[in-house]
Image 1: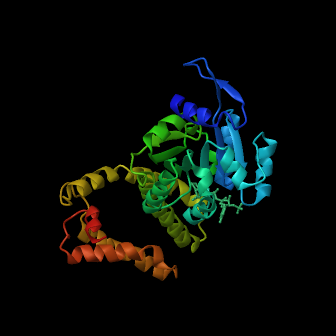
Image 2: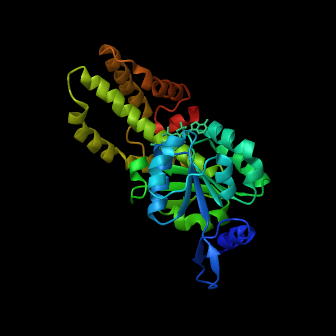
Image 3: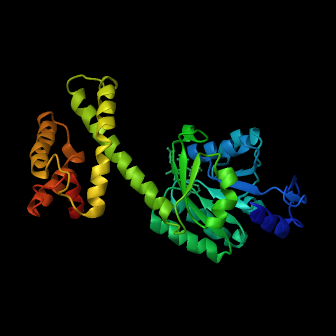
Length: 315
Ligand code: FVH
């Protein structure tokens, strides 16, 4: 934190505003770093409100300016333009809808992005993160990519965690404020790592959510409420979660035959009933069909006695 504060405050002290903080290591007065949150949708607003509550000096900007009103009332500074906001900021924290939006706002202002720390919490792909990291570094700035593993109401609670990757010095320097969002986990110097883990976790989540929504569609045919099904669904998910341990071990060793209790031939036969039931009830089996195809491909490859983990060889 000291090096970051020192760097930005000494570079900018002569020209920028001078709200002062005391550096306990040197007893020298230093300007507090100025964080700008760009993007005030549901998530950006939750992040900004959290930073305000923890006493950070905060600037906010949003394409639709009215969304800054709540934060301005809560004590944030909303400058008239993005250019002025970037110029005044030490740390630029982005939380926009997608990578395209990030590029569309940063690229026209490259001259204002010299010697900043850019923290991008916008969801994206590993490749997008690496590409933006390279571009930000060309502007002599540090880049940290982030994957938020929380929904807006979870920000600032013990249940939230955020994955970061990229410039490790930038992570260490910003950890004192990043930790207010939720547990901050550094996933390595490859800027794409946070997105890789984020997307992997979201893939796991959508598998679970999709399965639940499909089940609810089946049950609705018998006028059974999703909420009534919930206790059973949760108990089943909890009971099956430990089986991921064996699946992971089999995948890492590429030995899909060890520890098998439910072989793939049996699972493929049973899976046909999932698809048949959907059709029987006139429910589109669209969420089920990819796994049915993978099971068939695995059987064609001879994995009859293997575990479900063997389908990874067909992906
Ligand atoms: N909300 C969630 O549950 C998830 C949790 C995990 C992380 N995600 C990611 O966070 C990013 C922002 O999500 P959000 O929930 O804040 O999204 P919205 O409320 O829809 O706000 C979108 C903001 O993006 C701005 N924006 C869109 N297009 C542009 C553009 N071309 N130029 C500048 N800004 C743009 C939009 O501005 P406006 O429409 O109000 O003018 C909002 O500020 C996202 O990556 C999630 O995947 C959230």
